[in-house]
Length: 324
Ligand code: ADP
Ligand code: F6P
Image (tube, rainbow, N blue to C red; front, side, top):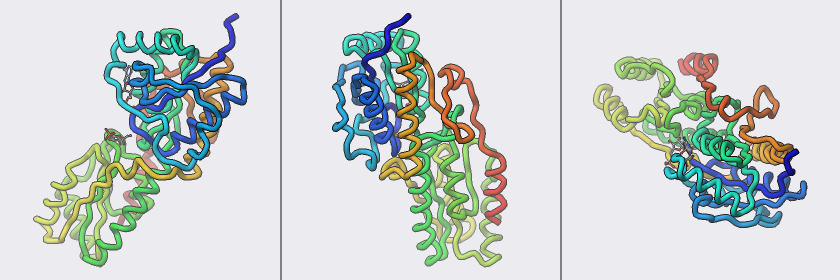
């Protein structure tokens, strides 16, 4: 029988997301309450390679549940995608006594966790990304806050668009994923949504819709573009040239990644953080936590990474229908 784990580590990796702090807090406090030592690894896999690692106590995670960002910092670490980096990472875990590691991030970060698991470090992934683009789970920490931030910004743009009778092209985050775009379009009543997963309206058709909607009495037009589709400034210019309607492009950008997490993000982060430690305590490894059909479950990381996520067709249809 293998010895029970005594020391775990926690890191955040990839793009930050509101709620990561709540997840770190849950990991640290659950671990301490179960008699484990916890080591915080700063700056994702970069900190693991450089040994930027320190012991965390309950008080270290006081006053962070309400804060955006990640107190452990985050980074992208190209070196860790190579075997040599992964071997060094596993060695560094051994040097610091880390037998189990909680990795909070997206699919890329889970690939790193899988490599460490193969090298004998027990790993558990927690889905943390504003993009919602982790296939095994219905929810990723940060999404709700990001959508609310985008919706709030779009509401404000709507006010000035109406006053000036303008068209607004608003680009929201999502390099490969249209979830923020779709959700913020439905919840802010946008007219058209362009996302990377679907064949979007051709430019001419989009412009025709804008013109027709003006004839129906609309005083503004709101077009939401996912970052993965891009070219929002060029689209705005084209709309203005063809229609004569003053058009502005706004790229919401990184403001969607910050801010105090919503209750939903804090709740999922707290539940997932606690579950991650319980799984490590049970001796599990190479698992990722997911929220599916209202329940917290866990998957083998490899299996999770093979899954495909598709845009909810019903949601997409409703988005189109309501934008008439
Ligand atoms: P996310 O975790 O949000 O998907 P990234 O794709 O940027 O973000 O990945 C975060 C980090 O995870 C990378 O910088 C790298 O250190 C690590 N990573 C990504 N892909 C791999 C891989 N194939 N093998 C090992 N580590 C990886
Ligand atoms: O965290 C996900 C995400 O916000 C994507 O939507 C976006 O494309 C990317 O990160 C931008 O990351 P960065 O500017 O940090 O490289």
